[in-house]
Image 1 (cartoon, rainbow, N blue to C red):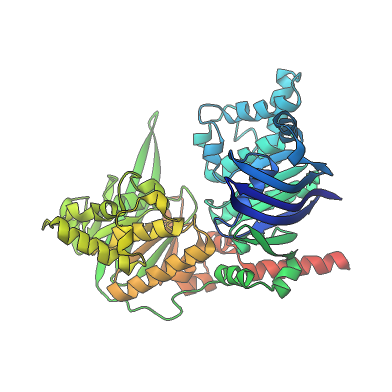
Image 2 (cartoon, rainbow, N blue to C red; image 1 turned 30 degrees about the horizontal axis):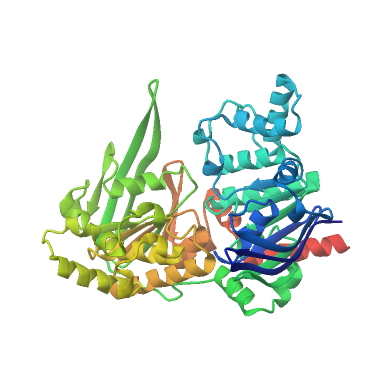
Length: 532
């Protein structure tokens, strides 16, 4: 039975065409994935379904929910549909949740919309049952828990619980796993499939990565520039994709780098010795975030530091950058002990996960890229600074015309290029990349990785990649370190660790990583079993 039918739907905002003649169907008990880059229009479709569009929106066509056209509804009528029929899972759970309210209060608030006369005891019991439905037992996650005490994956489960509390017929999931660890991502995707099976709901899954949706989607829709360029059931799509953009997305999901060995010198430029970092939790309790960790990084080498949230990798990064004091151990840069002193800061720089969040929006690109000059021993004139900034921008694929622009005038990929330019400006030996590509579209991500590869070869820079994305680490590092609970559990040459992992945790990380070839094979096997 057709649950949602989008027919000849077009959208313009202030006379600018955004969506063009969209036709998509979703059946009850079906997962339909819309895949495309940022700006392709996929999130606009989600917003149009729930009628959360900006002023100046002009709509044509039909969006039929059980043959009832949502475009004809008043705001009051749409509120009833949002309460009874439509659920939404947003990309960033921390911004979707109220930090001042407990998770129980937020779930119960949603339940009361559909059951205004429910008693307090029944309300509490139903909230606990909904949390258990998303695999959060009350013994570990009581209703009086606040969002900041949960991990990213746990917060996303709470958002799903809130959406489920109203028993929707259609669940819209907009990039629900982008910033999550691979194991958490796999669990969330598995949970969504369980919800389809248990409740018979339809799911519209929005994503930029074919590898993520290949395992769960029954039907795939490819969007580019506000148009549907191709759509098929998942198995047929991967067997006979026709559009060049679909093939481009497929190639990006399987992108490989560093097929040839990059020259690595024997010179050690970073050494971490017996690093231990503890946090005081109060009541004489401490948390050992990093436990006796040691490793080296050679000139020209690319080292991956991998693990789930909470494993200690970001704490190590802050210690290496001199932003965090540590109790035991030593850090050496270029043969000298480093504890954050200005004299050695030019040797190491960082590229953060979210470049927009790490930039002052009021500063021009020229000023942003020139910021690290303060650590240099020799001061430069304004003219010398401008010349060097222009040279670095050209090196990362930007131009002189970008000097006077502001961060909001660039795409996500371009902003990350600016962040890389800022990291390069002091000619460092080491660049630390903290989840620097996890939020980017797959095509843009691969462009950034290609750029980093080229810079490594040209400049002899060493990279320390901190990531939960094993696919990225696999494709760009020479050596990998796997962390769990603050300790190193496995390390070695990247190819060897991925081919023959020794620790069970490493095996679980590799198995949980989105793999498009493996996903297609599983789909075909399941399809063959169902036809027998």
